[in-house]
Image (cartoon, helix red, strand yellow):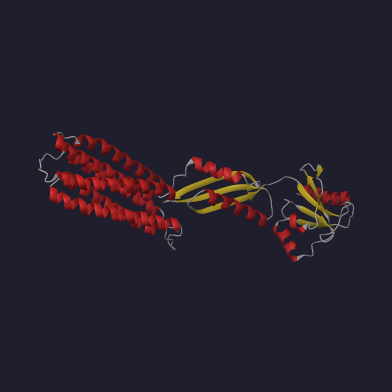
Length: 390
């Protein structure tokens, strides 16, 4: 919301600047009789129209409605395309004024015209530089297009200034300067037009930004693989779609991991409207067991266990025992251990723990065996039977 207000203030400032310069140039063009200044006034009028379009598009772009749930951000890009055509028109007008006007006009008080042009140049130079910096900070294509347009106004004013000063030296250099500057204006317009069309066609965000997002995601140890990242822009906002392969944690823990990844991305990538993260658990082969025991390795229940013995069983039924984990509260860490089966004397009495285990997709295997190895063998024999029947 703060960024939106800043964009609106910059566009409103551009509107006031172009309005003031347009009126000023028209008045002094009539007073001095300068055709170049009149052409410059017409150019400023095109700037004024472009600024009105920019202001309306920025004002409306953040609105979200039932019919437009993703917002109207692309109005900024549409506005930037319209501004690009105004740039083309301004460049054409400059070339036409320089090469296709043959009438000779006497300028009255050229020093007044020079003064007005200098005021316009100083104002447009300062504002365009500041607005260009703001456009990059706010990632706004409309502000960037408007800044380029005001910069084009500065360059066209430079043409008029050269033409007015050359009068005092008996030279006429404005048409050659006009040709060079018009090429720059056409280039700026083409660049704005190209970028606007690409965004409207949902071009991907830059590859370096995709790689930066990948680095953020891979810093999370729960991530096994990034299957896909898709990103697009609409106006100054980004939309991301991410597919991840995660270690097989419980549902609640997985949600925490995904929320953490999203928060990290939002903190380091500006102007993100939404992030959609689709995740899949790693499909592990075999089984991972957790046996609840006391300090001596005897099988216990959830309430009396002091240790967790984890066992990995491969698809060819090889057994690998891991060092036991000693803890006073086994329930706090069981759902985060990527387990398939918990071996215990009975199901947990605690209501929340019982449902956390269910949500994590873990089977609680009740056994009467106290010996750790016999309890594990009991589960393995049942698993063998399941594989044969399968």
